[in-house]
Length: 162
Image: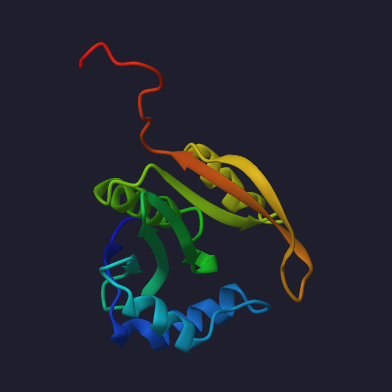
């Protein structure tokens, strides 16, 4: 991930992020307005970041929703020619770290069943499969695998301290 920095996404980034979104997810890309609505929740319930090369070129982005002790990865995207360089891992690390900062007990995400590369990344980060959402991704008619990573565990049973 040399020479790439992560920073908070701003509304000025939305045109570039949306162009990247259309390249990465042509069948089910979010609209620029959807991205804008997500960003409007920052910092209250949302945390969005971009991965930027020197000169301001955005090569990746990611977003997290967090409320009520639960966090959800909303999106992660890395430009195709930069995959395998650690950018996705850096973005996911930032989202998990933010979930911890927000005292979330777990982080959830959905990943396309046919996206083996992303699934391997999530598994490396301790995410495990907890369910399937049939035909979630449309119009491709592809299932989503729901994954979760537990961040903290509450004690079960009686405590010795009273």
